[in-house]
Amino acid sequence: MNKWSGRTKGFVLGYQIFIFLIKNIGVRTSYFLLHFVVPFYFIFLSNARKNLSLTYKQIIKPNPLNLFVLIYSNFLNLGKNLIDSVAVLTPHKSKYFYTGKGAKYLVELFNNSQPAILISAHIGNWNVAGELIKNKGGVVNIVMFDGEDRKIKKLMEDNVGVNTYKVILIKKDLSHLFKIKNAIDNNELICIHADRYIDGHNTIPVNFFNKIIKLPEGPFALASKLNVPYSFVFCVRNDIYEYNFSATKPQFSSDKNFIANQFVSQLEQKILRYPEQWFNYFNIFEASK
Image 1 (tube, one colour):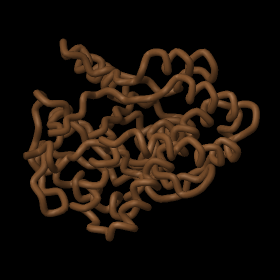
Image 2 (spheres, helix red, strand yellow):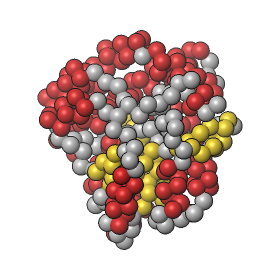
Image 3 (cartoon, helix red, strand yellow):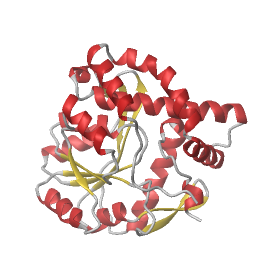
Image 4 (cartoon, one colour):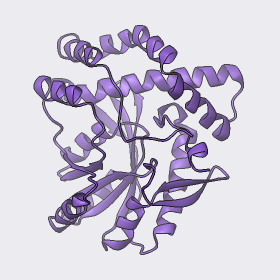
């Protein structure tokens, strides 16, 4: 059974090269060079390739050729999203813009000093989303596992700076819950991903593409217990510099199962529209058995 450990993977040299290129040559050139880098990852990251294949077969059921193209496109889009994550922290940030619906709901939250829970998934690019939300005047806290390689993190901070949104790291001692409560008390937004869980953590069963899978209980329990509105928010790449940003109308519910099923409905729609941008490299169907 393939389980997610909460850690991401990366090569420091690769980040060094792309940071240099983005800062000195530009985003388009960095995109072009991905065509020489992605085949390496495609060949040697066999587990990620295998799990994408199993997942796509459950969801989309493509023929062998389309499956190959879809998996390769996923790797390529991940590279483009990583480049954009760096670029929005450089002077290239001014070139980025978004289309879509729902940003007005977040602006209303900001204007009314209303805290809220923003529930999302590993689809698209939340680094870009965080910057876009910040530009609207909101304070965003992203709840996440500290799975980024520390050498890569230091490299990013030394060369392009830190993200302007706040990060709340999930800790075994549950201290992150106090930080979340403090952020809510300060009328800030909490963003949390809800499409991965770590073995041993509480989960909630949902019907996902006609299969019962497990999702982490935490995001939905928070939304149901904190007495603040929640919204499902996604930010996916359309083209160079262009992202599609969507947010559902904020609402309240004290039923975590209801919120989880709402989330799944939204996630299914996004995956069917942007299957090559769901960067979920473990078999969520197998892990839920």
